[in-house]
Length: 409
Ligand SMILES: Cc1cc2nc3c(=O)[nH]c(=O)nc-3n(C[C@H](O)[C@H](O)[C@H](O)COP(=O)(O)OP(=O)(O)OC[C@H]3O[C@@H](n4cnc5c(N)ncnc54)[C@H](O)[C@@H]3O)c2cc1C
Ligand code: SF4
Image (tube, rainbow, N blue to C red; front, side, top):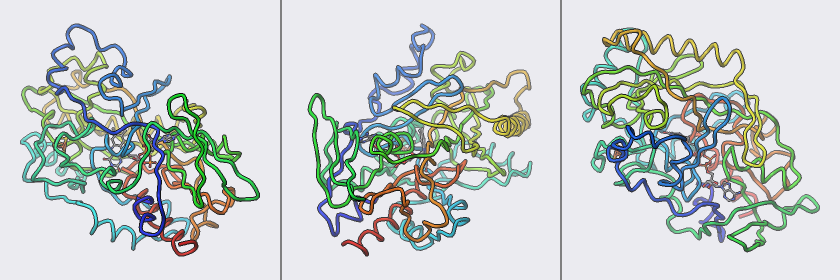
C-alpha cells in the first residue's frame, strides 16, 4: 500500500525475497486421496507444493506466513476488519484512511446468499446462544467466487483481493532478500540484499522496511536498530466435530465472526490440521470446525527467522474459555461431547516488535529510526489484535505514505 501511494511522487522499487505467487495447483480433494497412505507427516511439506507458503515448527505452535509477491495476504481468508483499538488508545486516528480503503477496495458483506445450510445453522445456533455473530467483511468479488474453500492456499479465480493488485504498475525485484541497511549520520544510505549468489546494493532517498512482523525485526537489528521482545502472533486453535456430509470444505472460510473479549470465534476449515493432525482423520465433507483466534500477551522474539515464544498462563486460560464456548456451540448443533477434537495450534499474525507509542502518534516514525527510514508493517502495531490485521496495516501504510509525501515529496 505504501509503495502504491508513494509511486505517485517517487520512483519506487520493491525488493521481495520471494517469487511471484502461484496458488496451489492440485485441488485439495485430490491431495486428500493420499491421506490414508500416511504420506502427510509434517506441515512443512506444504512448501513443496506451494512455495509462497512458509511454515516454521516451534515446540508450542506452527507459524504460517507468506514469502512472495503479495506477502501473507495471498494466503489470507480475505477478512477486512478495522482493528485499531490499540492505535486509538495511543492517539492515532485513522478514520480518513479506513474510509478511503472502504472506497478503493472491494470490501463486502454481500456473501450471505452463498452460505450453505451448515453455515446458516452455525450462525443461527450462535445467535440463539447469545454469541452475536456478524457477517465478516470480505475483500471479495462475490460473482467470481466458486466457493471452493481454498482461500488460505491461494484463490484460483482472483475473486479474493490481495495486495498483488497494488503492485501491478510497480517495479518489483523478486528473489531479492534484504539483509541490512547502512545507516550513517542518522540517514539510511544503502540497502544490502542477496539474489541467488549475488550480493546487491541499492541506494535510495527513502527506505521503507515492510518485511512483516516475522521478517522486519531481523533486518532492523542487522542495521543496528533495537527491537523489543514483544512479539505477538494471534494464536489460532480449531475445535471440530464430525457431522456427516455437511461440506464445510466448500465454503468461504470465516464467513461470520463472534467477538469475545480477548478472542474471536469463526467457522474455519483448518487445512493444516486436516492433512497433518492425526485426530483429524475424518472425511473432508464430514466435519464442522470453529476457529478460536486469540489476542495473545505481547511476549516473544524472532531471531534469524526463528521464533522464541511461549504462551503465558493467561493465554492458556483464554484459550480454554474459547474451547469451552466452541464445545457448547458444537454440542448445541448435535455433536457428541466425546467426538469433539482439537486442531494444531498455529499462528499467522506476527507483529509488535517496534511498537508505535503515544509520542509517535503524529509521525508514526520511531525515534530509533533514521530520518529517511520507515517501518510499515505489523511490526509497528502496539498490541496484539486477536483480529485480522491486514486492513489496519494498510490504513497505517497510507498514513505513513501521506506523511512522507507531505515532508519529502
Ligand atoms: C492463513 C492465514 C490467513 C490469514 N487471513 C487473514 C485475513 O483474512 N485478514 C487479515 O486481515 N489478515 C489475515 N492474515 C494475516 C495477514 O495476512 C498478515 O497479518 C498481513 O499480511 C501482514 O502484513 P505485513 O505487511 O506485516 O507482512 P507480510 O504480508 O507477511 O509481508 C511481508 C513481505 O516481506 C517479504 N520479506 C520478508 N523478509 C524479507 C527480506 N528479508 N527481504 C525482502 N523481502 C522480505 C515477504 O516475502 C512478504 O512479501 C492471515 C494470515 C495467515 C497465515
Ligand atoms: S472460496 Fe471463493 S474466494 Fe475463496 S479461494 Fe475459492 S473462489 Fe477464491
